[in-house]
Length: 400
Image (cartoon, rainbow, N blue to C red; front, side, top):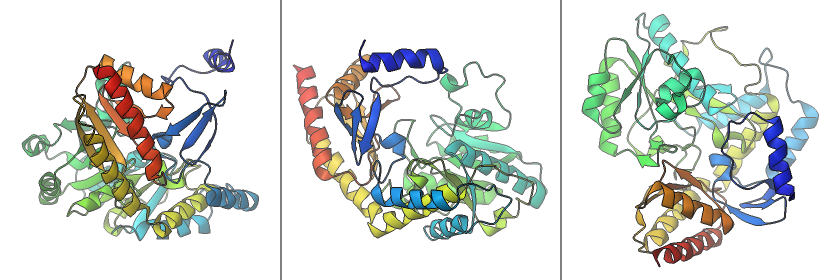
């Protein structure tokens, strides 16, 4: 039995089987490279599902985490903590928001958004609104509420009854959204770029229509930036590609480059909905993770990683489409959130994905036929070029 096989057998005995693992056991990583237990090298184009945006084991960040771990890790949110405020100030400078709520994950950030939308409507505006409108192919998290917001049957299987208060409208269909709005609607929650849904992007006209509809009907316009936020799209936030100003933004993933940290940001007006005791978290926004988060934002700003993501994303799209493979229909997305839409069957796409893994390329396959790229924002053009060469080689082999 190989070391990998031994690890796999050990996991079968010890862990709940909730994950479809990739056939790799990672023992260490640095930058955009990972090595398995047998020493094989991989180029990581997934970055922990858009998490390690500064690359694995960033030395500046590791130094800050080590220093903070010796000073203060956790005291709970019963105490004032300077580290939280330092991160909040940096975050709020990236957009038009006024207030932050820190939590542990993207799902929790979306839960906070759902709760503040309902409480704002019911306690500040004195209405009975509670429904949240989301969209087909969405992904907002794995809690019971965010599963209902996600609305995909494959994730809801076995978790009936579905949590009440969520209505889904067809993606990118303004008439469908108008029909979904009622006097019960509290908010619309939308991803500007759907990640898990297949890297689907909204048109400027549609996004502006959604905001206009929300304003006209007294509905909160909430944007899920859990995956697309923090420079990945080529701007600090994906909504900044459009002429809109959301009422609520959620984020997590890259915020602390691998440590568990999420946030919900909103305006002073909507923040009136939260008062002491109305929402809370034990671990959220502790000193260690917020110190790391502040350093992450400092590096992103200093190294102009939004501009870098835009440049490298354009490089990817141009060179992938230049392969002129009949297997590639299009490359979608912004910055370094990209989806390669394949023309083949799901079975053939899975075969291609497996071949990439065998060639040392870690990439995601979503919605059956979309290769999703979420590399570190620090990845080199040379490393992306290596991926394109491998992809070209495999596609030509398949075409023959």
